[in-house]
Amino acid sequence: METRRRLLGRALVIWIALTLATMAGTALAATPPSGTVSESIPTVSWTGNVMPPTAGGCGGPNNSACDNFKLNVIPPSAAFGPYSIRITLTPTAGDWDLEVYGPTGGLIASSGNSPQQTELVILSNPPAGTYTVTAVPFAPAAGYSAMAELKHQSIVTNPPGTEPVSYFNHVTTLQSPGSDEPSIGCNWNTDKVMFTGALRSSMMSLDGCR
Image (cartoon, rainbow, N blue to C red; front, side, top):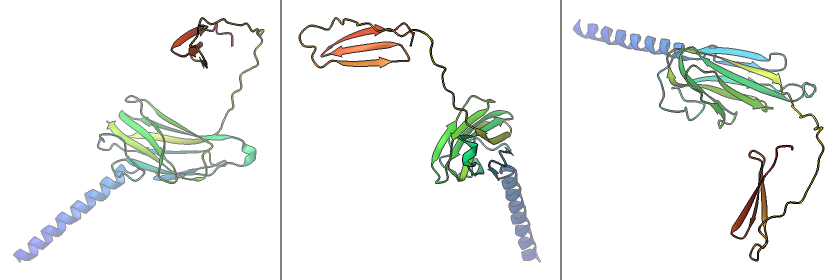
């Protein structure tokens, strides 16, 4: 009788453990776990529940400590034109990060903003395949909501300038012997032009009328 009770007790403990593990696995999975975006179905959304925090990134598309959503991308027709996949992840509370892995399993994009800020990744003309969108529980206090959208990729072209174009010669001070084979470099972020010869350099600033 005692042996039977022990066996029943062990069976009950195992059943409870399996039930809790199943419930935990279900609670921590993305809902739904996968989805598709295409020209006819341009938007898919999903949610995830809170998870234990991680010390860093997930390191791959199959880390069970992270929330992995399988996103199937079907490119639109040629008539649709250039397209992009816009992926957003918004924490309910706390800090979630975002990682996107390509069909071959390599990391292709990521986003890591401050707590409670939306994470954003944009894939430009991605090829067909199944991508893994990973919600990284950096320091979550609650779950998250996420969305992937297939959108037209807008191509921005600057209007032609109307200002007159003029040129002039700038005489450098590097004319002494030893300034052979000079080099010129231009930084359009700072509007500076550097003229270097041998061990001497000269800098010129542009007026911004480019």
